[in-house]
Length: 116
Image (cartoon, rainbow, N blue to C red):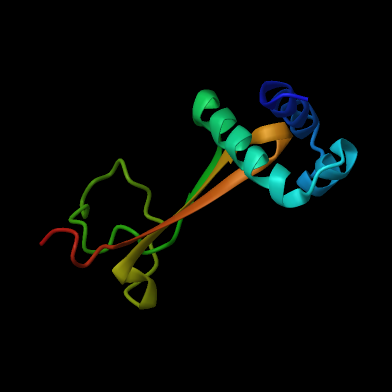
């Protein structure tokens, strides 16, 4: 089996959700040979697919303290009173991922230093 055929065999199995160790066993290869191919195939798939659709986005209470947004009626009054949460904005974003799974990513910003 040549390299192109091997990559195609691995890709086909990976796209059906087969784990790398099972792919290696099915092809009679060592997992240490198949794992880098799976990582490369997954990276190529992610790059070509782009970002999935946003499934949800959540932000902590106290996120807008220190950002100078007071008096803006377009922002809901959900912030907690002054306390522990006021120095950071924390955001969690869920996006549609591969094979019907969700991909989560979290972000944290120090809001007290955001404006200087």
